Image (cartoon, rainbow, N blue to C red; front, side, top):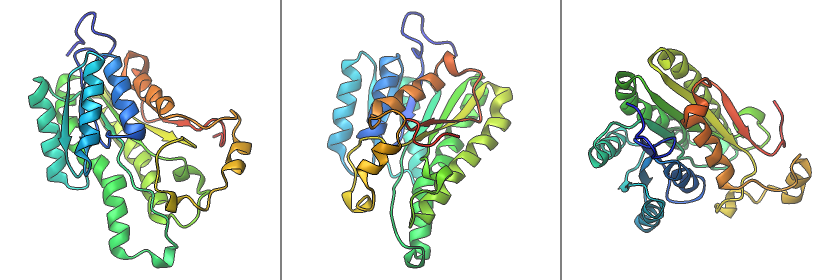
Length: 258
């Protein structure tokens, strides 16, 4: 399917962004809309935030639909993708898996239920989304899948997050496997790994972080913004990213260099 002429680089595309009611997900949804895509905005608990982002997307001239779904539930992800396809009359061409929880627990306090809960949200949700969008992408001969990971999946610099680190590292493993398998069908699959991004967070999970120390480590002496991560996603989603697949784009201000 070719983009609609004159509608922007992503005109004529349908994008799903999970966890897009605030922070990085919201910024990604708005950036894709600004490039012409119609957007499925997703949240789990706060309908008001989702509705706000839908209105912001529409104000940019794109179409939007808000779908509440727990993406750790495979059936709910299937309904999410179907809702987007029905709303815009075309299959999903851009899928951004952004949902994640960043729980901090000493390893010996992580229960089996905790382990499964974090992996279901941070890793399995990406599998479910890919599972539901890739068949249509293969049939169209075009698709973009982006996994939002985290730099602790590479650095291991934050302690007491074994389940989160394992899931974030696993996301990029999934990226590489899908990129290899679906590249011949015109589908790219990549990972974006945000670093120190200024977002609204649960302060209880970040009391161990010395903000001044982080700032000293940054090559760019400022914290990142959600829009910086969104710009990376737009680059990968457009024609600009057509020859990039199986890669990880670190958006971390040079705090860590790989």
